[in-house]
Amino acid sequence: MHRFFETSKVVAAYFRTRPKTPPEVAKKAIDFLGKRNAPDEHGKYGRVADVGCGSGQSTEMFAPYFHNVIGVDVSHNQIAMAREKNKTKNVSYMVGASEELPFEDESLDLVASGAAVHWFDFKKFANECNRVLKPNGSLFLHSYHSFPPHLGPVDTQRFTEKQLSRILESTQIRTREFKGLLPTHPRAKNVFEVFLQIYDIIQSAEKTFEPKVCKIVREQNLDNVAELLSTWTGYNEYLKRKSSNTNVQTTQGIVEDDILLQYVNDIKKLWGMKDLDNDVINVKVMLDVFAIASARPEPII
Ligand SMILES: C[S@@+](CC[C@H](N)C(=O)[O-])C[C@H]1O[C@@H](n2cnc3c(N)ncnc32)[C@H](O)[C@@H]1O
Image (cartoon, rainbow, N blue to C red; front, top):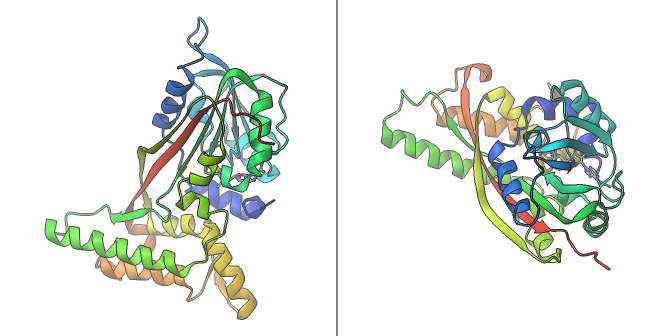
């Protein structure tokens, strides 16, 4: 099992910088679920589990649609953070693994998972979904695939339209170069391939793939963007390789003169902001969300 997201330092950075999944994503799951499963007289369903919930980024959005929303994660630190930050009455969190879900047979209307299924043993997870979902229940898997995100300056007044479009294009080229320099964890590759292999493995009465459910658009300062990128598996694989080769010094968790620092500095130069501190540079961060929805999956032998 891959345990990168577990240390309290990563959990804190993850909570500070990773985006919450927008409500449109929950709506998409409910629309699919509603095809074969009607809500009760209160307009709600019984129970949903958000598996690999982290510190709750993809969990709370289900609260309006279910009596009980349960976030499950294998990491004790993620669950501790989720519980500490939770303010929603019908949402709770528990430690548990996707391969051995802590639920009774046929007790859930929906199993959801955000930016996490590629870390699971998918065969065991699918079999568990078959066991814990009601016969008319659904599985909903979503993630954002444009990681690292598209970035642009918030302060666009200082540029002409032509300059701005050149800056955005150059930023995208630089982002692609940065991504190309980082090792891709074989499991993270699944995300870049929009869970295509996972989609193919699922056997069920009905399944759909939605390439663009919605966009996540946020504003963060450049320091936060650097921290967001520092939670990326590819970057952490790079750090591991680098620290086994050289004797590196670190500042705030980011290795001196490494490629993340260079990337951030190059962006500042491209935007004509190299003399400004990172924490006063506001950045528009954009990510596309894709999703797979499926009727209760068949067991995989
Ligand atoms: C990239 S985070 C996603 C968190 C959150 N769902 C989100 O949308 O940002 C992946 C999460 O999956 C959890 N995870 C990895 N393998 C798991 C497994 N086998 N069972 C349950 N959770 C797992 C990790 O601990 C981590 O919190």
